Length: 272
Length: 126
Image 1 (cartoon, one colour):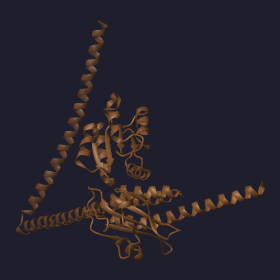
Image 2 (cartoon, chains in turn brown, green):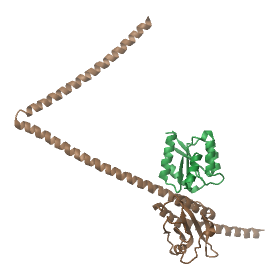
Image 3 (cartoon, chains in turn yellow, brown):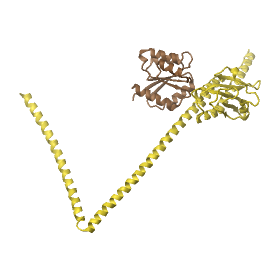
Image 4 (spheres, one colour):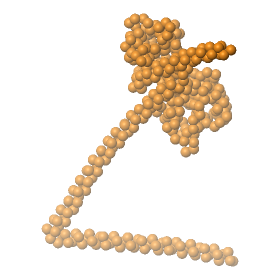
């Protein structure tokens, strides 16, 4: 019995809440209705005043016309601004792509130079040069020549894609390799031609203090690599500069290590 | 978005550093490096990874062997695998894909390309 009573009270409260919400909504509607009535009356009054005499009607009409002209002008200027914003947007999008490409290129160049200077071990430096030429440039057949201090000849220190004996000598006068070395400039040929050991596609002289210490000759590219990009040319310059100094430093380090060991040997001998 | 874990299995330190550089541009990503197939297998078997980038030509254990071992393990079958290799021949691509690789990219890589593929695979796996 008491539960029926409490249910009834609950239902009654819910009804009262719904009723009060409805009352509030009706009040809002009445206020809005009154506002619109006032606005309509004002407009009717404005129109009635304007239509009393032809001059007033003309003034009212020209006022509306001028407002319309202003709005049309505003609309045209907004359209123009929209067009400008769209153009700016396109420019930003293409600039974003350029910056992104530049960013990727810089990352590759940074990685290449970082790796080249990460060790003082000659074999490690050569391994890194090979990695860069394969992975970043996309070369298939290539050789790294290094100057032999005793003979003064450039010998193959590392190679990929072919037997070391297949690669040409750098000492042959007038050959593309020796010409590139004499000029001290990177030479870049047609990347699409068939591999030819007499005609390297790319020659990168390795020069330190105007003295050649080696050369990288690329004879063929990976099959999926078509042509050279801006990054490739930048990588060639990085190789020419940083690979040279890395090789030079590694050689000096190994020479100094050898000398140090010899001196240490003498000292140990004298100490005995 | 939850943090994602990506495993790079590549013997070349140069390539690993380049891939890390590219992948760091993705937010909420942890990158783990492995220097050969065996190292990669050890790491992927002992920890959770949302994606693996695997090179083919590697010492100790090559990438194809690693892919077949990963796909043979039930708990690792759904891990997306992207192959990054110098081998550009059609049959190499088909072989890697038939072993269970999801994507096949040839070197030299384009960082944007790697990023869009990795993003797509991570999204698909969610």
